[in-house]
Amino acid sequence: MDLPITWPDVEAAAERLKGVAHRTPVVTSRHVDRLTGAQVFFKCENLQRVGAFKFRGAYNTLSQLSAEQRRRGVIAWSSGNHGQAVALAAQLLGMPAVIAMPEDSPPIKLAATRGYGAEVVLYDRYTADREQIGRDIAAERGMAVVPPYDHPHVMAGQGTAVKELLEEVGPLDLLFVGIGGGGLISGSATAANHLAPACEVWGVEPEAGNDVQRSLQRGERVAIEVPRTIADAAQTHLVGALTFPVIQQLVKGVLTVSDAQLVQAMRLFAERLKLVVEPTGCLGTAALLAKLRPVEGKRVGVMVSGGNVDLLRYAEWLRSA
Image (cartoon, one colour):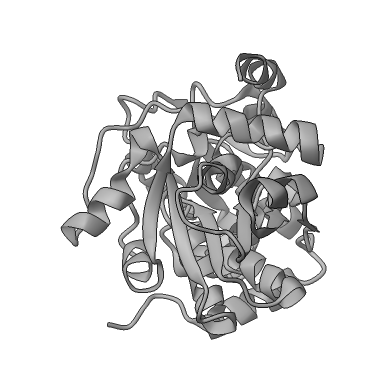
């Protein structure tokens, strides 16, 4: 079966992003290495533009639109990070943007999206169909739809983060990547499969939202209720139609972690690495710390996907850890 993206797509995305996206740092910690018995490399996409890896896929997608599409603008739906990414990419490329966002999105994400010049349309994540809202606006205004994960250009853009990681640190034995709709892990697995084919790529989901894990077990996409978890960027109910076959072919398996384990990982980042990481950005780290896979003596990569978190809630979570 031909996959929707290949290594040349990731390479082309990296060229488009050169000088626009940040080449984010790779951070190590002797404390984490002692805890795990592994040599761990954190790819810090919480320090990317808009505070998340999503800028990569958004800019790669918008930069390929036609002049007419740019004039009409773009519509996206997002719990926050994708919305901010599309808003900033649209601002940089001089096009209008509308972002449909949940009413309960972290205020910092709502404010940032508006700050990048986008129009924000709010909806109830538990009752409304966000994709239908987006497609209605697209039809009404003639805008191009930019999905949060299920688009080849989005997927290829996200894969550039792992391309950078592997080019900097060399081959890895394992790579932990958080999963929402599958854009990041499909791009990551595509890059890892080319640059470090022996590397096992493991996806990590919230316990309450294990739609990808269930889908792999069934061999087909399985829809679930919108999960209630502090990992707001992973509150997806169905893995993408394009991302799923990539996961099936290139990802070793999917693990799950609890909200409590996410908070423990957030606290470790704050105390030991001096990094602010949002709950979804801690999925891979939580799986590593919980030792859900044997990593002792191995070289392990962890995607730290984002750092956009409401600081009052962040303080409350850390206090509860």
